[in-house]
Image 1 (cartoon, rainbow, N blue to C red):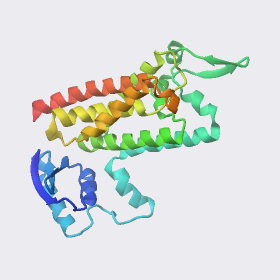
Image 2 (cartoon, rainbow, N blue to C red; image 1 turned 30 degrees about the horizontal axis):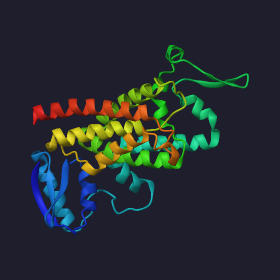
Image 3 (cartoon, one colour; image 1 turned 180 degrees about the vertical axis):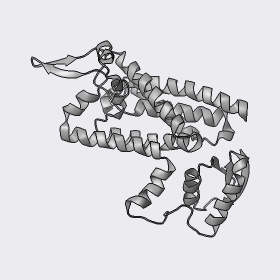
Image 4 (tube, rainbow, N blue to C red; image 1 turned 90 degrees about the vertical axis):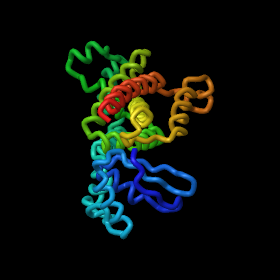
Length: 282
């Protein structure tokens, strides 16, 4: 990382940070004494960065239509322009959640890892082998888009946006898509291996994104990735806590722990491989 700029600690840098992500300029803000320090990941982006800083200092608009607060175009130039795939994944989860409220079990039965049905007043569960042989391959991934409550949905979307947009902004949409699909596949299969069929949520993917971003930030600091260490401690601590007997009495007993663990391991493996490659070419 290359030190570029020092600012007073109380300086509001939110607009600058947003513009840097939108322009896909790898960076990091740190604090030193009473100052904020801006670091640049790739020196080849120095000129673009300095032009953006000068416009920010003059109070000019940093992105097209950034000042537009209404209308679909202004919204697209904000969130969607910053990380369109991450935003799209969130929209899909919201759409599925809305359809679940309207159509109920029909949506759930169509997206669980194996088909569900009712035969003679009893729940019928298909096998994974029959599911794949019938061409329903999407079921290996689709449970990640199911959420069974607002709290479940909101927290998963927050982590998906926080980690996902970093990967998309710094390494592109294809890399994020690959991490999401692979981790959804592994986390879903890990949960299915416990004998559970009715499960869902993006949390396994979120833990994979955490593992990926964490290793990229730690092993390839010039890549521009960043995750607060306390956030890593909190998320890992939460995963361990939900695996204990203390979680059930306070309402957190029904958690897809194997999906979390499978997602984290897959993210760590992908993060290790990606960071190793970044170290070789840096």
